[in-house]
Image 1 (tube, one colour):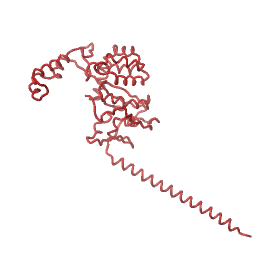
Image 2: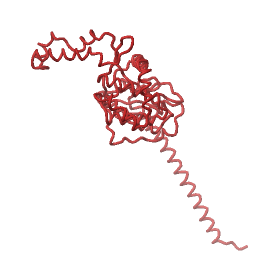
Image 3: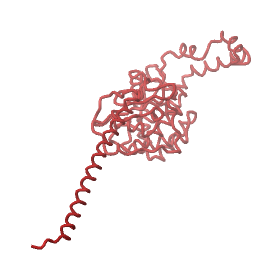
Image 4: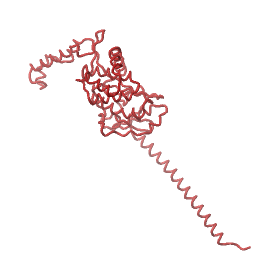
Length: 329
């Protein structure tokens, strides 16, 4: 029998190449596996090395983010601009619920005496150069007192209570209109458009005459808002005050995520190094008030996060970010 040495050499060559390929493949897989282990170890080590505050809350199928505002607080308005892209991304899968901060007074005379200053302190005010003369000091205090006790500067209830807001009566009336607009509007995107219009075109000195055009531009039902304002206004204000009191809300903006303060005071560090831990994710202090930072917190509050949570919301360069811990009080 004649042996075909050329064929054997050819087969041997093929066999060696196959073994080499298998060896190389196993080597690559082994190295990849080892690299993966080292990556996870390093990642976990980095997570463990970061000191932060764990966000502890009860997760839900539809998380609720309540954002407490004053309608003309600049920090609150910035927060509304920050929350808009969160709403646009997640929509009705999360309950983004606006809340408003009101002041309540029952005894205007005594309250206003405490709020507007003591004329007997005028010599000290002059000495501290707050005013140039005792006469000027007395005039300022007297005027402030008369404005304070003027019932026209408040929303008045039938039982003699007075309601206002930090920036005066027209901020309080606008707070109420925004509550009513939210309650009577099924398509919440129209409400967000209304808020954007108000923030750009109105202020606490002209809101009562300015708001209607902004509502029309947003295709809101003007009559329904007015009916709510006139018929349910006092009840709605009292409900907001009950919530702000219950949750110890001190300023605008304040966020409550599934009934938990977000961020907590403990999450802030003077040097800006604070962080919030969301399982394996981290929100740095600089991102507490960014669309993506808030989105991450909301998504963490889901029992099962929707697919939209994988989307990163880029910061709009045209939207001024709210100060890390700024607010109106």
